[in-house]
Picture (cartoon, rainbow, N blue to C red):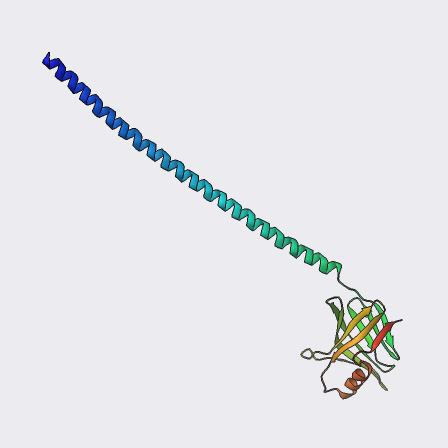
Length: 191
């Protein structure tokens, strides 16, 4: 009988060893499973944070885009146009299709293009001046490297006011005529 006890004791001891190893193995597997769940949860949180950041950035992009679109449409809606002929004594200024003609008197005129800035200011860039000489009209283009500019403030739909004159001093006759007619603050009214 002693041999049977030894064999059963051996089997019992082996069984206990196998159970302990299986317990340790199951414990390790369970720990790995818990670690993997934690890693998965961390990755899920990172994905969620990235999605929130992406949504926040998209909202900012949309807001900027809307601001740009609103400013662009506001600029187009607020773009002031001007046309017609404005007069002060013998001087007349005609605006049509981004071009202007200024008749200083019966003998001379200025031509060029204009633009309206900030819906309140007309900037006239003179490209040529014409003088009626005894031999007939003579047109002289302004040099491309020189700025001949007269600016006006838009008072209302019927009036403009001289804001500034900027022309070179070398053509004294033309300059005197321009400065005499375009005195700062002088108001030209539509005809």
